[in-house]
Amino acid sequence: MNWDRPDPFVIELAVGSEDIDGLGHANNAVYVTWLERCAWRHSQFLGLDLVEYRRLDRAMAVVRHEIDYLASAYEGQQLSMGTWIVASDQRLKMDRCFQLIRPQDGTTLLRAKTTFVCIELSSGRPKRMPPEFIEGYGRALFQG
Image (tube, rainbow, N blue to C red; front, top):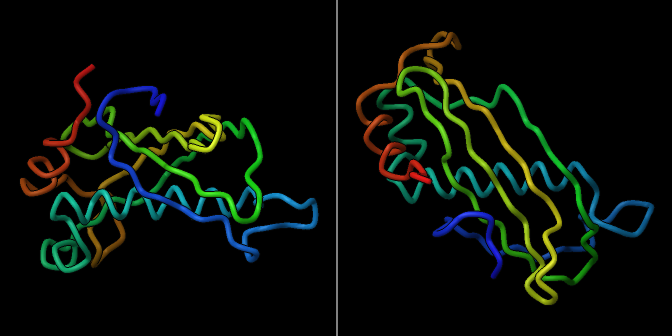
């Protein structure tokens, strides 16, 4: 697979009939759902699941998506989405990049970047990352 960066965290996706819009391809809003699914599975892989978020009274909340839609996905296609944590100030903000590839022909369908801010769950306000976030997400920080 021709990933933009080495060693992505990867999830496999299947384009279902419910993902298709009136134009016959996967709707752009579905891609955002896939971004969230990939980010969340990576967090879980790093040991930062909902249980841990609640225990720490912290979460990483999306504040910005930047998405380049490069090609369409169609019903029945199998896709691979990779993600990398590319920046973290280890206080409040963290950036993730994503790449969506159709393995059948190697086409990159999407590139995206999402910015997250650490919030306190009980108040919804921005709050410093706890040591568990700095350690867990820091392990996955791309060094390139």
